Image 1 (cartoon, rainbow, N blue to C red):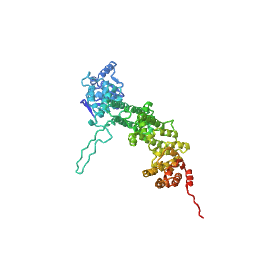
Image 2: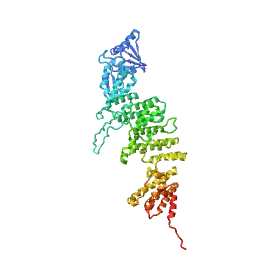
Image 3: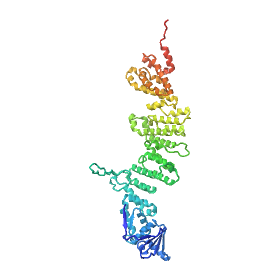
Image 4: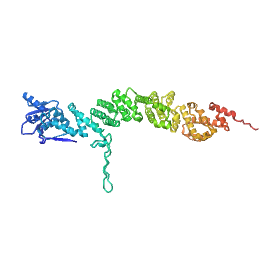
Length: 603
């Protein structure tokens, strides 16, 4: 910290209690000056030689036959006046970053200019400010902090503006040229290392990070912080990511870390002002600067403290552009009355709808639907969309535990993302299962609606095995799961058969929606000839893992397959040319009995 000493005489100011100050001298005091609650017993001559205002006040008091002067609204109070008085007496006084603004405002009040005496206090303080204080990083911040209690004097003297400009200019310096000390949460140097022979390695100072300055200015009050950040942004040399980091650091420093403290009445105006200011200071480029996680946390706080509606809408627009970066926990925003759900599902629905509209305007969804890039190109070029799909499925699984969540809200949110964002349906299956588990009063119609969100063809093997054993799913869904697992098992053995042109099975891998409606028919199709023999062992091996209901369904499907296998084995061409409608269980039985040779007993 920089400091400046003025005067050379010893300090002879004495105190008599808390309210009386006097100069120890052989000469009796001839003037009493009241500053606040403190009386100063002083001498006219040294004071009048430096202060134009005191000359006027003493002259007026003399005309009124009084030796007492009242200083009303004196900037800096008794301490600042004492600094000025000591300077008038030529006593030693030390100025530093903590008292220099008060001394400057007090000297301005007393009119201690060059017109009265050359090298007066105002001149000396200005030299100290410009040559030392404002050239120092931390001193500039300290001085700026002290200006708040000295308004409007510090503003009129342009001390506030000069400090802000000094700080903003230093933040824009190339980090490689930063040589002054600053506060940062990372270690600036490695600890000394001692090797066996007792020698030390030199400390290696790490590179100064771009956001080296963000923590130091966090101590500023929100009004001053806002002005500093506006000045930093106006320089045009700061990355949006660094601005975002600075705002995040300030929010973490001053915003309460619990919902209870946020919604409490204590300092509610200050918390609201702080949040609104941070939102206003966000980088102008809505897609840059701040992480989606931070923006969602900021939105959560903005809702709880009742921030301006327009600012919240701006925040939501920013979030939609980076929604793919969010996590499920970020979206768990507590609902406010009159909502009865635990979390604000309507808000998330609004965010997802805006995201879908934004992607549609940019043409992303059309490109995904056309899928012109192929599978690899789809994954690489649309990772953001897939991330959003996984995010919403995870969010649905979390909110499904809420007993107050309506089926309509669940289905509406699930359908708000395009189908292309959900190439695998394990996530939505988990959410549906959780909802069925927590909402026991659903009707068959409701279960059919919610299960309609899931495509069993897009379940992985593990999810299919779980679904096949899931007693909460409707019977129709379990049948579909079992059927498509059979199709999958058959498809694994299909290539060897398809290599021979006469052994091709015309519909072994057909998974159309029409087959979903007739799983028994399609199951018979995929078990023709040798294909059934190869896949039967593997299919039956997992049968013992299924619950009784699923096992019974599986047995029925298997029985259909065995019936088809037994008829006219010697003619594969004839078997494969049959109409699919003739392979339902009932028809298969009658067909088999008509073609079987009759036995004749021999008596």
